[in-house]
Length: 291
Image (cartoon, rainbow, N blue to C red; front, side, top):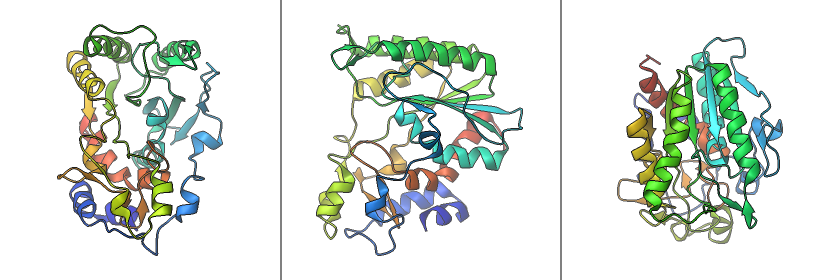
């Protein structure tokens, strides 16, 4: 299985890069979970009601990993942060970290009000402030943050790069003020359509479901803004693009025995969990620790 293969590899990221290039054009017989189950698999934060929906501004204290540890790590952002929970939960248990999950649907990390159903997404603004206050009280050693590059701002930006950079800088500074190391995971590449539905229609022609860089990048300006804000605030950047796409820019929907996506923009739970060794190595580097 992909998870075991990466866990046992001397260099997990190098092995993953090799497997990405070896991705076939047919659904493997040992696909785990089966294609029909990919969409149904949900991580604990969804099952436990810890990923907030569109209307709620609550910030319940949802603790995972080693709950007795004084080494606190926070996952913060929208569903594109939540998609990394399976990997981060495994890393936290292996490293002895207490993991606190704070995520809300479509709520951006950047302090930019976006439109939701034709109105300002007010519950996101309230939730973000509440979450940042909770993080300050927790005084974590590390905050991992991420959000999707979708969503339109309420107020049109004359200079989107400057506007999004300022929004990210605001949040990154508030996180850094807690004394924590802060790392931002850039948005993952988006398949051109619902990857599960595409594979179901073309199980022997998966190349028809493969996406390509740069089309798979949702918003290049926002990606650049995230990097710019991280540089000015001392936040480290982790780019997951090489974990989902080959060096040539092909982004397959199956790697080894594991389906990569669960829809048209989220990484599947099984694939995220398999990437735990890769993410763990990156976070050890951020903290300056040995694994």
